Image 1 (cartoon, rainbow, N blue to C red):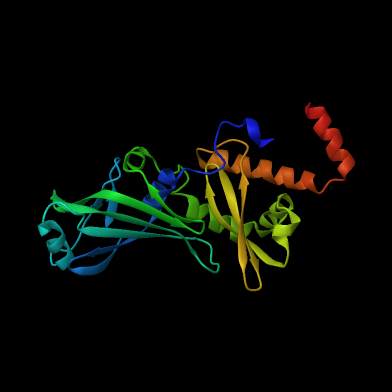
Image 2 (image 1 turned 135 degrees about the vertical axis):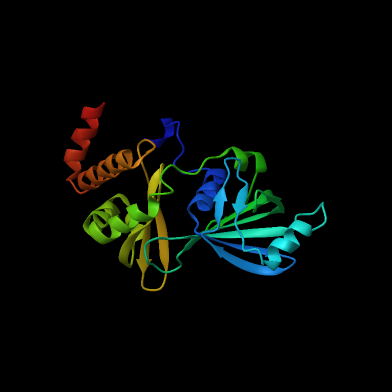
Length: 241
């Protein structure tokens, strides 16, 4: 089924990096002056520069702006935390190495190296790709959507596990929605001591919440069909032709 799709089943690393940046509330900055955490202080320019409002007495700001030209003088770290409570809530970390410049009463940070670390490992994101990428259209709504799914539709989440192969469900204690992006929904399968993540790709990308709702309903319909007797499924497949 999947071979003729032209869209990807998962977002590219640059898009994921921009989504982490867009959705993160806090930012840790490490520079000569040490390490400081800033909450609700950063915004992101379209080209991926990070604009930071810092208090005037920040040692870090002074050190960062006065750093000699050349080498990157600061590292920004962002954590991507799952909105739904579960073990190992940090889904990804994003590190940007680069330099600050003072700009209209703010610090503008231009990345020189971008590294995204997920459970699958760390990947260096190309600067041009990072600058050109846009965050996932659902990034801003993801926390609200997943929390709603977990709190109000636990039965639906449970039903979606029919689309997961039996091996992945072995020893499962509970299933929680871990992530959603325009390309699919990721479920966290929790076992007594371990866990695994399973991705359910959508049949087409979802660019807004309305489309997302429709995509999830299609998955639920597929899940219901998955529990039909085999004969019915075969009939249905032939009918699709």
